[in-house]
Length: 280
Image (tube, rainbow, N blue to C red; front, side, top):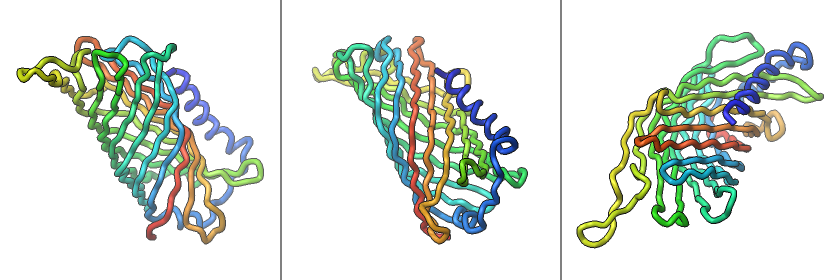
């Protein structure tokens, strides 16, 4: 799965370099479009997803299923940088293995700040490099397993990021195409629970949660990679400052835990992003 997604992104990157020379006619982007892009926007993301999940603390089964995403953010496009604060990020997947007896609900929520600086490139391309700080919780609710119900990863991480943008003309219309990629550098997590059974008897006869697993995240025990391809379009009319993007986003993370209890989670997303200008 990781290799197949890498091949898709590699093919798109190759097409971005080859097609403008052979199959595309380069178009000069209107000055009005450049002016619109240099503004502050309120951003709403929504889309459909397909998740692939394994969690050795929960079971040895492979789970997969559909879901949806909904994100809210404030994004600033300036001549020299892009900055975005995602203050409410939500997703939900309904996953199950080959049989239907152990359905897992997989919600996640978090916040993220991204800052990218523009670097000098040939005129027909734009490239930004920088990073993002990301804090999120990924929850697995597995009530039908009986011995446990809640599994979660509470993660804070720092991630380098790059965006590559170009404007071309193909099939009698203008295309604004953006490629993006990000990968984790380091972070910290609290995993719930540390062992496969999440509850034990307490002194009062009730139950209490067992000990958590706290872990420093580095490339050898944690990887979180995202890559995406987007097409940007305006709503219509040069005087309309609002615009939208449609694209595909692939989000994958793997985490090694104590006692060789690991987690792997991949998410394929089809995303529609709406941008509404707040101010210039």
